[in-house]
Image (tube, rainbow, N blue to C red; front, side, top):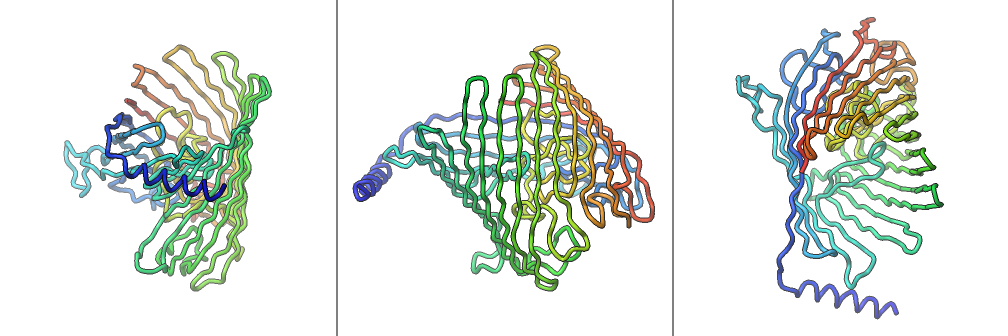
Length: 465
């Protein structure tokens, strides 16, 4: 039986390669967007931000503790899908960003400035089913790697992925091999790879539906001091080698008018440093939300806890993400719980990093916890409003996640957010929002500087096709 299956697989591949090129169905999709921000003490995370004041990594200017900023820029994505059959297609996806309006890549100010930052090839892959009609699909090339993206990982990577659906239980299984970095093609002194498996099992019991899931991810980083920038001074000597792994269990579901989502992820591993002592890695996070839908009204509660770094510990106790600070993605502001703190709440279009006190979790998760209450109301077919109130606390030990004074403070503050989304046409939408953070002691800066409360106003006009 195994020999027959192997012979059939080989013959199927030969037959597929021998078929002459044929016509394909070509479809195009994407968006054109423009956005603007006005903000205070919330660092811009997206485009090149030019001019004074120089802003620090935690969002406040050096010597300018209460600076305000504003910018506008545009982005477009264009994806071509070339489908030969239900079992074979290819994808080209391009992304185009402008600089901040009024400047150009050389920072030469002009009345009509706005030249491009870059035109990027975002996706370039082939997706095919293994002949002869085996329940296996391969995707090879530059592709999105998404594993619980709102809390764990989303990036565009050169990768090979394989997926299958196990009948009759409908268990979906996806495996990934992704090359995150390879600074040298001649040896293995520097580079990073990610290996992962992600599983989901949907279950339905009348009005109750639940989809439990599990994933395991492993990364191997060989640095040789090529990437020595980490979020703790103890790593300043650079890493020589690091292995991380993540074990995640999760569930999405719906019970009558209630829907819920919950994630638990453990992060373990080991880091060998060139100068400092070697370190063990151990951290965890939990994230969840539940909401109730009553016709046009949705109300809910959400929260998360992310273990923070102990600045006096010899080990790594903060939650790391695949790749670390050197392999971040601008594809998606993963968190999206607030406007000011992490940017991304109440958005309906494609991900697009904006402003926030933390640099979206495309790098590593700072230590914090939050709880929030939110409500959305569909006023009219074309008008939706939202509001939320949340508290954010600090879980770092002997230090703070954002501020840098000498105290170990616990309160980042209370944030309130308001949003209005307008569907102008079927494919054209305007998204607006305002967020205000009543800052706590954990935002205090060195020297006893107390920055004014951070706030941000945002607007995005999106044409999606």
